[in-house]
Amino acid sequence: MRRRGERGFSLLEMMAVVAILLILGAMASPSLMRAIRSYRLESSTRQIADILKRTRYEAMRRNQRIATAYQGPTGARGAELGIDFNMNGTLDTGEPRAQMPPYLLIYEWSYAPYEVSWPDYTNTMLGTTITFGPDGTALEQSGGNWQLASNIPSVYLYTWVGDNYIVTVTPAGNVKSWKLTMAPPWGWQQMR
Image 1 (cartoon, rainbow, N blue to C red):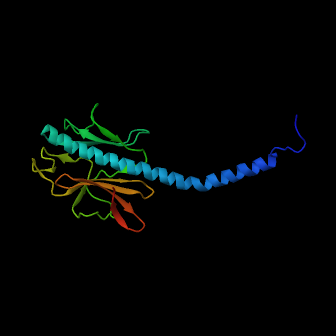
Image 2: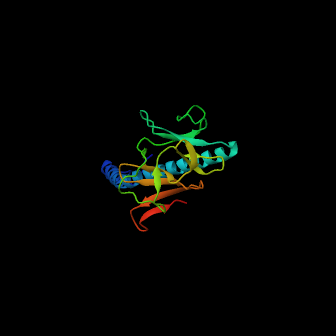
Image 3: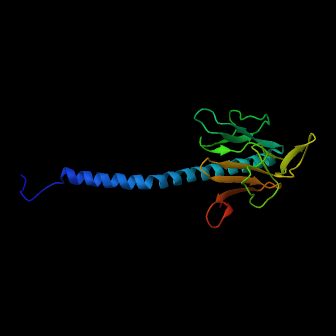
């Protein structure tokens, strides 16, 4: 039995609550989407750095030259950067790789976009094929011979909305990840 003093919520009160929740959700949505995109981009940058570190490790472990290989985006899949164990220039089945989100772009050319100023190097070479020697150093081919890299090999990742990350490799083989910040502290900041 129902008592006379008890009442539920009216339809008008329920609609007011739902409207307030929808407005709050709409206000929070852009910030949430920005945070998710930033998290994914940082995760992809860390995966690229891990692939480069593993490539260096495998070159030292196997006592041979090993390089990375890049596979461009196909369909709804993003680009991939992986370890090219057999040095054939492509990612074969079983070779480790990092899968990038479809909206993430990797700079494939050997020069930088004009707005990029390098973290702590001035002689940086952008690309997606980075070769490590048996001693763990970064190598480049010159005149048919392999020699210590004279430039800093790096992979530059960016999105169309202005997120910029770079993974650099010193000639000694040390891998570092960087993020471009547009607020204090300004410029390229090393990721931890």
